[in-house]
Each structure stands twice: as C-alpha cells, then as structure tokens.
Image (cartoon, rainbow, N blue to C red):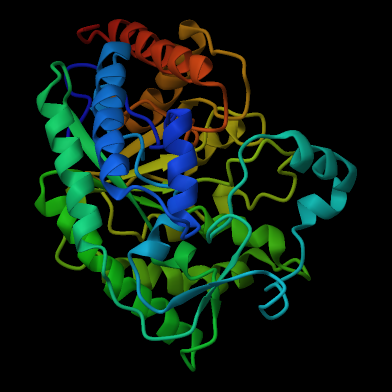
Length: 391
C-alpha cells in the first residue's frame, strides 16, 4: 500500500456516478429481470474505462472502478453467494428490528426525504427482503474476475495513477439480512465470512488493494432499542470483527483498507454511535488503512479522537476531507486545512486524503467531479505546506 512519503496522496471511498442506462440495467439485473448480458458486460467495461480515466484527470492517485457493475455496495453479493432468497416484504417474516431512532425523532423529515430523494437501495434487490434459506457458499468467481479484468484494463490505459483498489462488503454488513437456515447467528456470520474470503483473496491476488465496506459496524446502533450502553454495543458487534479478521486470514494487512461510515443518506444522524466509543474495536481489524468520516457536520469534530488514541505503527488513516452529505464543493484551502490537522496528529506519511462516503448517487455527477478536483487541489496545497512535492 502506497503512503504519503513524497506528497499527500488522494483517494475516495468507492462509489462514483454510473451512466443512466447502466443504472437501469444494474437495477434490472439485481431484480432478476431479463437483460442482455453481453450488452451489459460491454457497457460495464466501457464505463469502467471512462470512470478510471476521469479519476486520473481529476488528480486522484488511488483509483477504482467506481463500482460500475454493482447495483449497490452490498446488494451485489446476492448474485455472488448461494443460500439467499429474495422475497417481497409481504411474504417474509416481520422486519428485523424497529425503525431507526433517527427516523422516529425526525419522522416528518424522513417522510418527505424518502419521497423526493433519488438514491434509495436496501440490502437486497430494490423493494425486496433477502433471506438466508440455505447453505452459504461463494459462486461469484466469474463476476469478480470480470471486475478485476475491467479495472486492470482501465488502469493500464491511464498515467499518473499510483494504485487501484476494489471494494467488497464486510461479513457483518451482509449478515444484517434475515437468517432462517443456520441454528446460530454466529454460524450464519462465519459462513458468510468463509464465502467472502474467496472474493477478498481474488482481489488481492490480482494486485489490487482490497477495501472492506462495513457501515453496519456502527449504523446498527441506531436501530437498537432500548439504547445500549457503549460497552454493551461493543460486545454486540465484536463477533463481526472476529468474522472479518477470519475472512482476512492469509491476506497481508498492507493490502487491506477498511471503510466505516454512519450511512450515506442525507439525514440528521443524531443517533450515530460516537467514534470514540468504537475506535479501539476498529483498530483490532487487520487492515493497513482506515477510511473514516471526518468532514461533515456530525463527525468533523471527531478528529480529536486521534489526539487521544494512537494510530498503530504501520497503519494509515484516510479521513474524509470532502463530504457526500452536501452539494457545497469544499474549497481547496479548507481541504488542505483538514489534511494538515490529521498530519499534525498522526504524521504526514500516515495520511491519505479521502472522502466521507461513496459519492455515486449521493450528489449530482457534476458535483462529484468538482469535489474530487477540489480534493486533489487541496492535497497539493497541503503537500506544499508540509515541505513535500506539490505534484
């Protein structure tokens, strides 16, 4: 994994804008509706090439495929794992857990938000529940290989790119689906981990950085009633860390980066679990880098956590220095300030500038690329002020 030794490197969380026709095709594919597989594969290849080229032009150093082949960050695994069945909500059992506390507190806002906002997916195909009804195994070898080949070809066609990464969902986030097959929830969780290990290893073996996406480590807190104490909540989610580390067995830490966020929706987020209460558990994950929200109105103050908690040696922090939660394009000077705050605390070589969450579908594509351009400009400013090469 590259480090910011000669200049502050830049990256992002993963999701980037998809063309409208590809969004439609991905949605149909996820729902199990008829689609032209050859035309879809060709469209994905072209879209990956375009999005990688656009990242390079914008100045992003560590790029990815923009998740062009995926309907959502987690729903894609429905096609890659056996044992899951899609049902309409009416056919399934009662929905697991109560409505989130943030939604309860701001019901009028969310009623309007759900009606007008353009990006809405669930863990399964849109409008369905996904239930585990049989043994889980990995069947996504062909799909992940296609993603690998598309990204490799796209990266070979651009210059000034340091590295490339690919995203994959964490076992704990996948396990938020309902289990009707395994007698114990721990068995369910570790069956997912065993299966997903094959995808993780394929990505790393192909020469890419593996990014693990795991918002459910903290977003689960919002749905717990009564509200658990911090110690109780950490005990509740600790098995998901054990399962992830199990799935990462044999994969070098410096080829793994771990993304945590409090959910990409543009809501109040008043019930987010504080970083200070999860950070020690977070650092137990066998990853060389951590991508963490750090530039929105609910979490920017949490940079002070790193003044109290020492980043382990050899690890990298990838704080979000531009946000998915606002249409305002952050000024490069502000981006530079945010980078310098972290460099002062954890060391400049241990900071890579990133984004809070995936930008695809959260803000308009024009704004996405403007934000990433501002990110790269801010990193150049910060590099100069740190006595590093600005380019």
